[in-house]
View 1: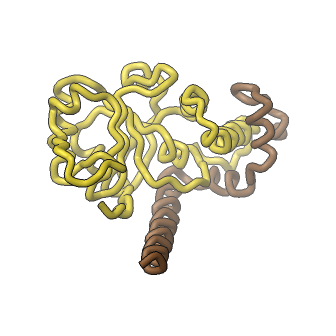
View 2 (view 1 turned 90 degrees about the vertical axis):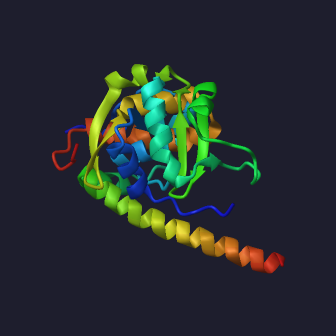
View 3 (view 1 turned 135 degrees about the vertical axis):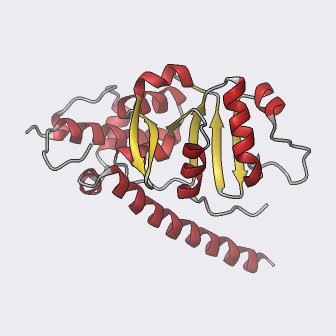
Length: 170
Length: 66
């Protein structure tokens, strides 16, 4: 399956307007906080209630989710049963790459992340993003060498924010 | 106003401190002067450009392999 360009604007709109309960983590949350990196997917932690998972299934059906990196033609069906039996899904869709995560390292369930959510404006919508400090904690908990550079960048953003410059935006 | 680089890390770590030396703070400071909405608009434009470039590179490599 060819990799479609990730349409961040449309994915954000789909998530925000479908009533799905989710928190944005990863590269997109880093962008919200001021990071200068490029990312190619949208990572979200979703609430694992039956109602919310049904909303995800309904909202994602038109964009034909499939397992990213899996060989074509597998009998993969993105329905409530699949979501209930799985936890973390790395998906390729008609809108690009989306990671739907039921839980991430570092106490990263939806409920555990809720106290650390900050609403950020993106593409004319309000996007629930994890706070800068929690994002650093999650990336550290993931324990991946590829995150060393992004963690350093996020720590630098935190330092810059704490320096007290008046011209920085929230 | 404090010197940002003197502020202790959230999680002090010599590995991250080593990487921190190479972080381009000029870009970060410019981003932090933007609103969140502006950061996303800027990112979307750059991501589009980066993904188009990757697609061209993939097509080129496919052509060379054929």
